[in-house]
Every structure is written in C-alpha cells, then in structure tokens.
Length: 285
Image (cartoon, rainbow, N blue to C red; front, side):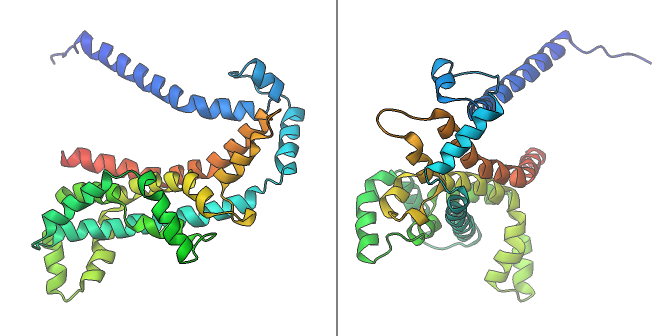
C-alpha cells in the first residue's frame, strides 16, 4: 500500500490557522477578564495599574458591592426594565423583518424592487438625525416614560430585512410553498409554520445582534425616560461615575459586569443555531 505523504506546508498552515484563532479568542475574552478582575479591586489599585490579571481580595469586592447598592443601584429592577425592552424589540425586529423579507422573495409584485431600494435608502440614514423629531412626536402623543417607543420602532429594521432576504433567496424552496397553497394553507400559516422554522439559524443570528443593540442602548432611553423606576441597566451604570472629585472605578466595573451577564446568556442560548446556520451555508456552498 502506497503511503501518501502530506506536504510540509499543510502543517505550517494548520499551525498558523490555529495560532491565529487562539489569538483572536484571547483578544475577544481579554476585555471581559479585565472587567471581572477590576470589579474585585479598589479604585486606587485600578488607577495605579489599570490592566491586571491578578484579582483583588474578597474584602475589596464586598466594598465595591456595598458601594454599588449604596448608590441606589437596583440591578433587579434594571434587569427587568432592560429585559422587557430588549426581548420586545428583538421579537418585533426578527419576526416582522422576516415577514418583510418573505414578501420580497416569495411574491412577484410590481413595486418589489423599488420597495427594496427604499429599504436600503432608509438604512443609510443615521438614527441620530431623526432623534429630535422622534422625541417631539413621542412627547405629543404622551409616550414619554413608556417602553413602547423603545420597542415598536424595531419593527422597521432595514439591516435585518436585508440579511433575511439574502439568506432566504437560496434557502427557501418555492416548491414547498406551492404545495402548501395547493393543500389549502393560508399565507400566514405558511409563514408561521413553514418559513419561520427554516429561518431559525438566520433569526437566531439577528436576534443576538438585535438583543445586544437594544440592551446596550443608552441615547434614546435617556431622552425618553426620566423616572428612576423605569431606568434600564445602561442608564443605571451611567450614574455610577460619581461626582467631580472621585469615581469608584471598581464599583463601575462591577456594574458593567452585571450589565454584560444577560448578553452572554443570550449568546450561549442562541449560539447553537448560529453554528447550524454556518454549517448549512457551508454544505450549500
């Protein structure tokens, strides 16, 4: 039996690829490690050595914890408020964007291309440009200090529509849709029971992006929400900067770490669907 020797360059390429992946992993995890370590250190330690991989003592962590809650920081209330906004906006974003993409792909209507062009044009408009007019409109209809202005606008998400459309074009078999119509299924039933399960990997990917964006949003909530009991987690963390003379950095890092925890949980819950989507795309390619 002939033995086929692998080229030496193959091992060198694998070594480079693995080394590069390990480097990217370390760079990605490094900010989280620094944030966790600094939450166990005092403000003086952080000012002296901002970057350290050695955790502080349990006493310093307890002091940061006491300072955090001593400033009126209520993480449970912040988690609840942020969760309501993030889950609501993510559900609206993903569901209605997938429905819009389905209309652009599955139906042949006269204004389909101009409508998609309009969506792409809206994508080019920065959100800050419309913030003043949006606030004035919300104020006139008495929607300030409400979560609705932070949830309902997620229905119009051009980026998600574009992603869903591009994913749907090669992966949505029109024959199945025609068969369902012949069997008497309505369009909403086809979309909810056939299309949505096929789009799970793409929906999970966009759900993570939408959830993280909504959870970290600070600009619009600060404009629309003024009542303390409705503050989100980023708004609460922004209050931890202290006064003009002293800032407890360990307390701030602890607040930031508590803010990041739900994002990590959301990623780990949806990551398997993203891997399935990448594998599916690789097989189709």
